[in-house]
Amino acid sequence: MNDPVRTRFAPSPSGHLHVGGARTALFCWAYARSRDGRFLLRIEDTDRKRSSDAAALGFLADLAWLGIDWNEGPEHDGCGGGDRGPYFQSQRREIYDGQIERLLASGAAYHTDDEEPAVRLRVPDAPIVFHDEVVGEVVTSPEQVDDFVIRKSDGFPTYHFAVVVDDELMGVTHVIRAQEHLSNTPKHVLLQDALGFAKPTYAHVSIIVGADGSKMSKREKDRALRKTVREREVASSPVVDDETWAWWLESKDHQLELHAAERLAADLGIDLPEIDVHDFRRAGFLPEVMVNYLALLGWSPGGDREQFDVAFLLEHFDLDRLIKSPARFDRDKLLSFNLDAIKAMSADEFAERLLQYATDFHGDFLDVFNDRYPGDAFAHFARQNQARSKTLADPIRDGRFFVIDDDEIEYQQSKAVRKALVKGDPNGYAHMEAIRPVLEALPEWTVPAIETAIEQYAEQHAAGRLGSVAQPLRVAVSGGPVSPAIHDTLALLGRQRVLARIDRCLARREELSSA
Ligand code: GLU
Image 1 (cartoon, rainbow, N blue to C red):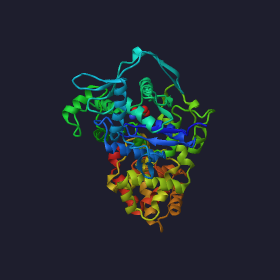
Image 2 (cartoon, helix red, strand yellow; image 1 turned 60 degrees about the vertical axis):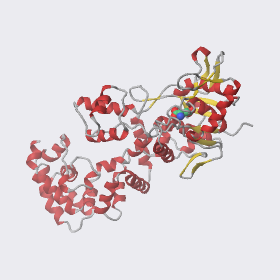
Image 3 (tube, rainbow, N blue to C red; image 1 turned 135 degrees about the vertical axis):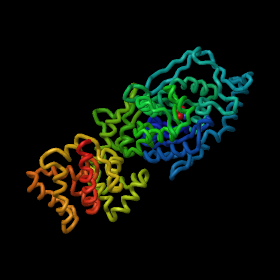
Image 4 (cartoon, rainbow, N blue to C red; image 1 turned 45 degrees about the vertical axis):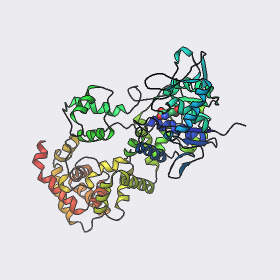
C-alpha cells in the first residue's frame, strides 16, 4: 500500500498570485484531493527583500477565491493548521541550521573562506539521475554542477536547501511544479542523497506562453504601458518620478511598482493585460471558469472535452496526462468560456454574483445605483444584461450611464451614433422630438407601457422600424448605440432622466450633426 499522497504549493510571496502559480497550485491540489491525500501550502519567504506579508495574504485570498483549499499551512478562512509547521520558511531557520550542522559534521558541506562566509555543498563526482513524470529521465553530469551555496552569508538557507529540507520534514510525496524548476532538481537530488532523505515523485509542468509565444509574465503589463507611452510620446507622468520614468523607459525588463503601473494605465485610459489571478477576478471572470481554463494549461482530460467542472477535474486528473510542450494562454478562449458559464446561470444566480462582484470592485457604482434605483432594480439590471455579458465587468462598464448625471453623458463619436441621429428622413432627432411628448404623457412609466408606446409610434411614423426610434433614444440616454432593450432601459432610468437626456441631446443637435 502506497503512502498517502501529500503535495505542496510553495509560493515565494513577491506580489500577487500569477496564473502560472495558480495553475501549479491547482494541479497539486487536484492531485491530492483526487487521491484522498493532503495538500500543503508553504510560504517560501526566505528572500526577505522580495517578500512581504501583504503579498502572502494576497496569495491566500487568491487561492481561496479559486476554491483551492489547503489542509496544512498558514491559517486563513478555515484552511491551514497542521503539525509539521511552521509553514513560513522565515520561521524555520533553526531547523535548517540543524540540518546544515549535520552536513558540516559529515564533511558533505563546508564553510567558504570568502569575506562573506557561506556554506557550500560538496558535489560528488558522479552523474545525477532522476525521473520526472512529464519529461522522463533526466541525467546531469557532475561538471554541470559546482559546489553550491546552501546557507548564505546572511544566515538564511538558499532556496534549494530549504525546499529539500521542508519537503522531507513535511512528508511531501509528490513535487508538482513549473518547468523552470527542472534545472534546479539535480541540486535537490544531491541534497536528498547527502541528507539521507527520501525522493519525492517529480512532475515539472509546462511553461505558459502568451499570444506572442514568449513566456507569460508580469512584464507584459509594462510592455503594454511602454508601447502606449512611446506611441503617444508621453514625456512624463505625475505618478512616477523622473528618474524612475527614465530608468523604466530605457529597458524592456524594467518594471514599475504595480500601483504606479495601474495608475499610469488609468491615466492613459488603457487596460493592462491580466496576468495575476486578482486581475482576472477584477476583470469579472468567474472562479470556476478560471479553474477550468487553468486546468487545460498543461493537462488534457483526453478526447475533445474542454469545458468541465471541478468534480470532473478531480475524477480525471492524473500526472500521465500532463503535457510537455508549452501551454498557450488564449484570452479569447477564456473569455468565451466565461460567456458560456454566464449564459448557463439562472437569472437569480447571475444577479447574486454580479452584486457580489460590484460590492467587491465597484462600490461607487453600486452606491449610486442603489440610491437612485431602489427596490429590486439591481436584479432587473442584472437580468437585462446577462445574455450579452462576457464578464461580470461588462454590465458595470456598459451601465455607467445609469449612475452618472444627465449632463455627463458623452456621445460616442462613431458611425453608429451618427447614423442613429442624422440618417433618414425623418432622422433620429426628428423622431425623438416627436416621441418626447408621447413619453411625457404616458399615464404610467412601466416596461409594457413604454414598449407599447414606442411600438405604436414606430408603426405610425417609422414604417414599423423600431430601430429608427429606439436607436436615437438609446444614444440620447446612454451616449452609445448599445444597451439592453430600450423599454427596459428607459423604465429603469425613470421618466425625468429620460426626458432630460432627450432634451440635452436635442439641444446639442448642431454640434453632434457636424461632428
Ligand atoms: N518558491 C518557489 C517559487 O515560487 C517554488 C519552489 C518549488 O516549488 O520547489 O517558484
